[in-house]
Length: 64
Image (cartoon, rainbow, N blue to C red; front, side, top):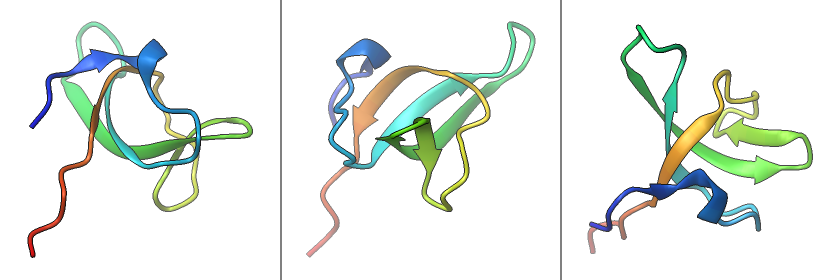
């Protein structure tokens, strides 16, 4: 598995990634499967990611 990277380096071509989000300084981290869409980060269910991601990681290859 790759290391977490700053969200500024995330792919913007519609590929899904694992995004790390933080709602506010007091809340736990949230993980979303997301992709960059025309209006920002979008979850797999088509809804907007509710919190701006701070870091990202590529999804692992599925088992064979």
